[in-house]
Length: 461
Image 1: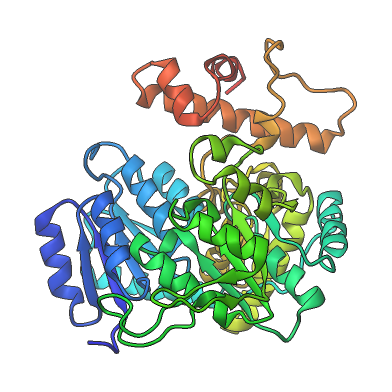
Image 2: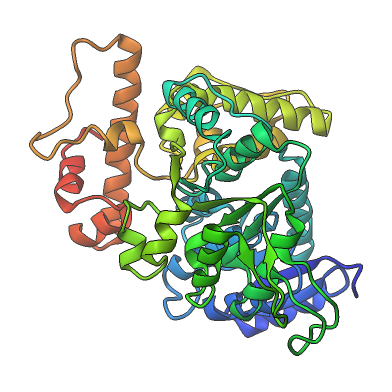
């Protein structure tokens, strides 16, 4: 039924699929998938991204590991950013739950779980998603944010293409909107996720089509280039554009000309073209792997802006936490939560692999769970991904036998650092046990060198 929201259920167990589908069909349009390939196929076939998802982590071909499930969450986050994702898994609930939430999942539930409880979790996850407020300005007082503001002010009036680079979750679309509002405020701002569109629909979606141009083209379509008029068009995940489309986009950038699918008339695009990529790319890396051809890459990046990750923004993390918690508290009409000093120390040392998006989700979950209360160390740790804190990982030097405390640090800074080292040591030992004593495999899981991993084992626990 068209008035029902879509729920994507991802689980390789057919019995679980059948039980959940039978229960949730009353509430949702249910779409099922058993592995990563079927997730991609389901997203490609749906007219609109799913609003909800129930996700198992242990998927084929490695059902004993969470890798495929994490990959599915990442794909859902990229193609359906508004989807409320609830992970349902029997694997290592603490660590995997933290990682799943860092990637974009809203909640984590251990198997077995009653379907009625899952329905409540889905509804809560949706409430959290709807409570997340759009940031309309660049929030922060750090040097890197001030540099970013200066770059935007410098580039905004110059009507050239801009390539916005940065890790997933740093706020690249926010930068694009800031560029747009500086010179084209009041005119259309459109964003298209190039990774979310089936390959055969990319050309008509971007360039438009005439009626009857291809099977299923029952109406004429202006396309994003036409609808953006003299405003701004953001090509998000631009590296995922099919090879066949790239020369046509290059023509738009060079001449402003394009044609709809199925017509010979040449049209002109007067929109400013911005693009974004979450690949950590030096110039040439993505091109060498075949994602963006050379000439298009240089035309897209006449100017390049790199958005800093949250771990480089220092005390801005507390400014952002306060901003999001206040916004969500106001939306839910509940009092804000606060952090104990021990929790603040952990928050200050955390690396935020999911960047500002992860921080916003953490703020939402804490506000829903602990409104009006003080959040302690244990409660905060339950919401964090158990990766190495940046303050520890960045201070490991290949030539240093172990981490030591600097006499120049204040007592508080030494206490924070010691807590970070202990957490890192605990993580290393737990990972080594899971990997059966294999240091190389444990290092790969933590995404650090084997030498640095062995150094972590020397830290006091």
